[in-house]
Length: 131
Image 1 (cartoon, rainbow, N blue to C red):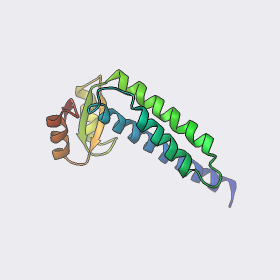
Image 2: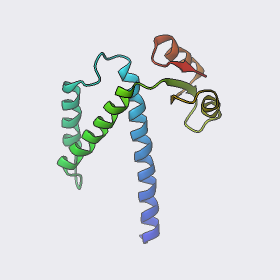
Image 3: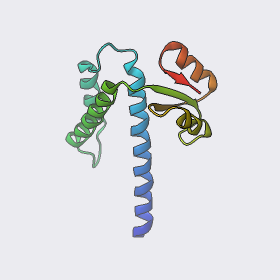
Image 4: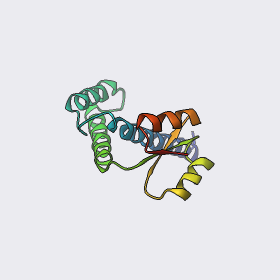
């Protein structure tokens, strides 16, 4: 395998990792609506234990635990800010998200699979607004 092809595969994996971490942070914001406290120590212990157990081959369990601890810490920081959540139909980059950005300046955009999901999110209080 030539170097450039290997690096392109690495770049694709990096992009996927960033997308997945962003999705996890969005879900963490949604879970905050159901919790009285930002921190759930038992859940953190379970997640970190699973991170260690899922480590295989080259993935060192200590590295995996440290990585997930950083993700959890970032999730808690974002949850504590308690930003306004604005739902839109589609994926990030969709026209509906662009319209949302033009109308609301201080919010976190949360993608939804359908307009029905946006409306239900607003009705349940998971989302502050929807478009």
